[in-house]
Figure 1: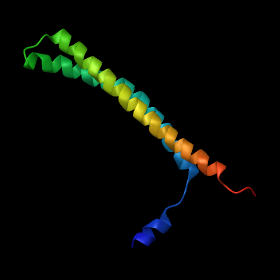
Figure 2 (figure 1 turned 135 degrees about the vertical axis):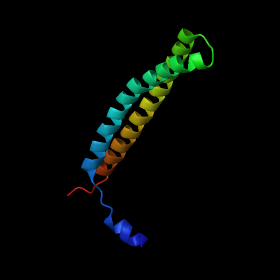
Figure 3 (figure 1 turned 30 degrees about the vertical axis):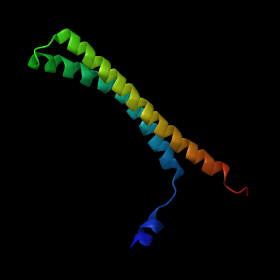
Figure 4 (figure 1 turned 90 degrees about the horizontal axis):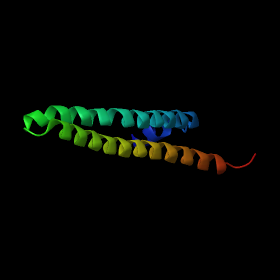
Length: 96
């Protein structure tokens, strides 16, 4: 059963490049979305906890920016690793 699944797997270098582009797109989205999530969380949670709303909004935004930048770096690193593995494969092909 496992041997059948392994035989169906093929190496597709074009797919690696497509996935890397998607990862870079996700990194940009993470930089935009997570600060907005942090801002909204701080804005709407502060009244529930009877805290200073502008302060909590700023803290939420800062946490969202930090988390978004960490996610962005993670996506970029994954994309670079995939491209690096692809280049290693190209460089290790026998010369014809």
